[in-house]
Amino acid sequence: MKKKIIFLIITFFILFNFNKAISEIFIKAKINGQIITNIDIKKEKGYLLALNPNLKDLPEENVDRYAIDSLINEKVKKIEIEQKYQILVNENVVKKVIKDLYTSIGISNSDSFNEYLKTFDINLDLVKQKISVEIAWNDYIVKKFNKSILVDKEKIRGKIKSLTEQNIVEHVLLSEIIFTINENEILENKYQEIKKSINKIGFEETAKIYSVSDSKKNGGKIGWIYKTQLSKKISGELDDVNIGDITKPISTPGGFILLMLNDRENKLLEIDEEEQFKKAMNFEKNRQLTMYSTLHYKRVYNKTVINEF
Image (tube, rainbow, N blue to C red; front, top):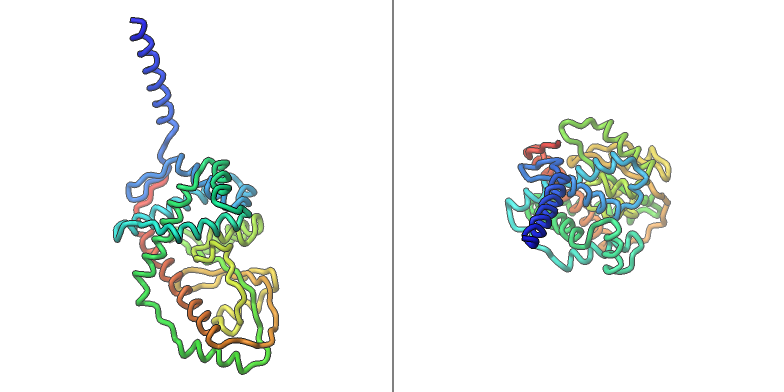
């Protein structure tokens, strides 16, 4: 009898704690019927704060919003990919991306990174899952649009040839944020929101949050570019900014781009034509892939049933 009473008491406490735990989990959003809970958002916040420490300087409600938007973005991509093929984890690529992540925040190895993640109540497996989705999305975009990429090789060679005929050319060091707006968003409001974030936590951290370009992993850094290699539209916008300043949103086929002019110099020209040709080709291909990625994401997003609670 005594054993039965003890068993009933233990069962009661187990059920009580189970029901309590269930009651503390609630749905925050549904993406095509797939749920996002408050626990998912908590983990996403940990993930975002771990990789972007400066986010702690932003208001809590902003970080919450970034976490929800980030999860919605991931769900939309994952659903689209899984309709086409299974997400396969390329361990070598994942390891390289993870190494780039932890070295960018001053951590020397994966074991130390995993210990660091634990302080945010997340682990390396979660990071691997999220990176795998991004890698799969990029692979999907390449497979889907690779044949649509059109690069005018003669035009590129002509530009490089014109560079070699000059003694001195302007060289610019750039960073970018490429962003899109949804149907219910206003460009000026989104622009002001991004500017506030830049003023609060800096361009690099803001790029990691808002940019849809692959350069977001490096804080939006593009690197040094000969100004004559840029379009007249972008080149003209750069004429109106000083070092350390940011352009106004520049409309592109894939959305809008903000450029930060980190430095500029007049450089005595000594270039390897073939090397510059390869760089220019890669730059143009990546630009078009980014454009197709953002355009396709917007199409998929607009067809997705998203309910927030």
